[in-house]
Image (cartoon, rainbow, N blue to C red; front, side, top):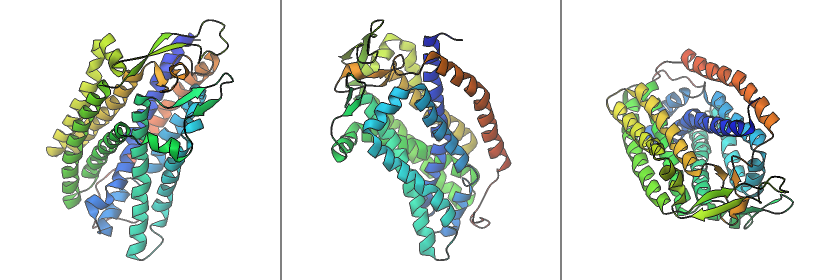
Length: 378
């Protein structure tokens, strides 16, 4: 059995990988759904062609979201409890939006009028856009800290209730991060459309890749500049041995430019945001050159390193508190027992390669170009 600290670090990495897998796969098919009207407008045949590129994959891609949620629940139960204690309205908003997607995929083909098709395609677009934005907003709020604290009985409390708790989350910096998330995934989605379609749709998708990719880089750099001026958290000392409450008894201080502390402490980490920027630019370049397959590879790497950038800025904090730094949750005090983490690790070692193999197999078996002329309603 691995030692406890090693397991805690491993699960920080694994949950990050699961979130990256979700962003790369499920984020891509959500982005494709958002691009239906900008790329195809009122042309139902073109919209059907675009939808047919993701119909075989979207439900399989949901596995990454479900697995990531389950892993957080099992590996970081305190994070799960603290987040659901105050963020349930935002989570319900995401849940209801995602709920629209399977309905739209199924019911859009059970009507005859153009209005029926258009309304369900619009529901598919809305149900995909909301999660793309909210997940980015969530990262923006994590970087600023959330207004929660734990009492002596380990009950979690938040400032405000309903809208008074939800609206502060929609602050300028968080919305900027949400916009970076949307544009980053739209770049991935437009590359996929360019790869899988032909003629006019592919040409329009290439233009969207150029716009969204460059906008992602610009806003990512702006977000980095703003983040430099934000305070961050520093773990001064863990809770003493035998402490009644290992979470709130630790010592945490708020420091100036704290989100860049890890980059200053270990300068080599600066390569992470540099690579995130470089990979997004390379994805745009390959799209412009008519190589969308290579573009998707670099876009996926750009998404991965963007998420790693946020994780590296926060480490070892997972869910920092803006009102009571001592209540902040870290990699070291928010995890399950050593036995639980060890059993979960063996499970992941067995099941994760199977999930990856299935994903690759599904994409290989259901490959090919589609066009508006030969699109088939699914």
